[in-house]
Length: 263
Image 1 (cartoon, rainbow, N blue to C red):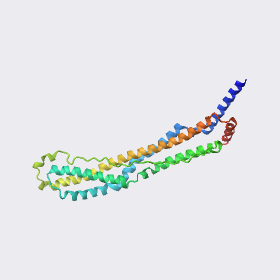
Image 2 (image 1 turned 60 degrees about the vertical axis):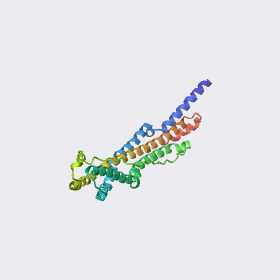
Image 3 (image 1 turned 135 degrees about the vertical axis):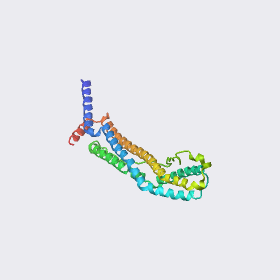
Image 4 (image 1 turned 45 degrees about the vertical axis):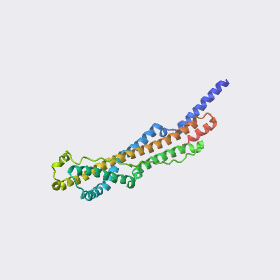
């Protein structure tokens, strides 16, 4: 008889604990649903971020950078002499160096990377705080647990060495015929050809830079989203362990359940 009573008592405790969990953990606290909702937030901002970066870079830097490089080109090559092959090699080396330097300066000193992520981080932080509030309303007074405030720490890696690429100065190997091309006649024609390519090179490398920044910021958004999910998951696991603890007093569980039924 004693063993039977003990067994029934344990069954009752288990049922009360399950009832307590069911009252605390409704569908809003399902981990799969939470991960899906966080994933949708992340994806929404990832889809927007490239177009925002591209617009920012081209609106603010495309024309000024092209104009600056053309002016620098005119100054630099006004005193350069040599056959077409020498000028071609010097131009390709010069334009790659100049564009790399300018884009690196933009990346390190002018772009506010955090600004591009502000809305995404705010949205994820609002989601985290809303979750906290719902869970706190369920357990704080009942189980005597005060949830810690959550804050998101944002870590962003800047593009410190932009991956620039330069096209061939000529589509054909015309420079191989340098020995039959009189530069005193065609020098200005050759330099004008190089000058006209600068706009294309700036545009191409701004697109490449856009891709690099987009990749970095998407990585940052993913880290923040995962951080939010992990914090929520830890809170749910903590409450789950508490309600499953063997040392719960049956009367305490009963009073807890009755209290929660009022919500």
